[in-house]
Image (cartoon, rainbow, N blue to C red; front, top):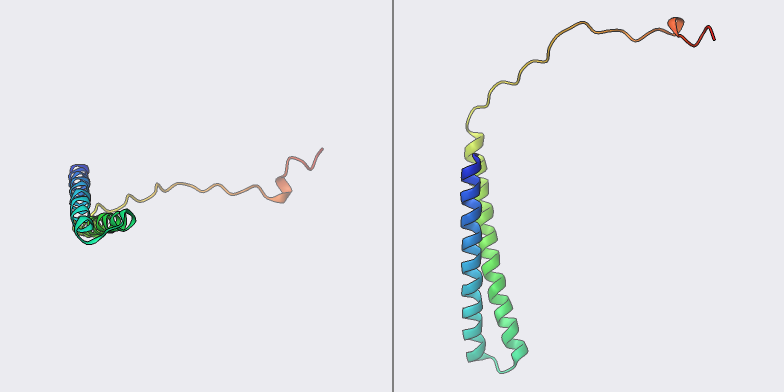
Length: 102
């Protein structure tokens, strides 16, 4: 997954989210004005509509990110480099302790 693909997907998700929030506010205001008499109920209808728009945006964005990450996993990765081999130094034994002669 390249950084430009990720950036483009993120920008599209933000744009879609703002659009759907706007659509939710407009549809909620219209529905609330027609069907509700109380301001509290109207605010609830608007809040519900905005929540639906945010939920749709979240679900779509999650699916698109999963699809992008799944497509990047199909690309074979380079084999990991083997660690350098060298001599392993042994820890000093209890007989070689520098504290013995003190």
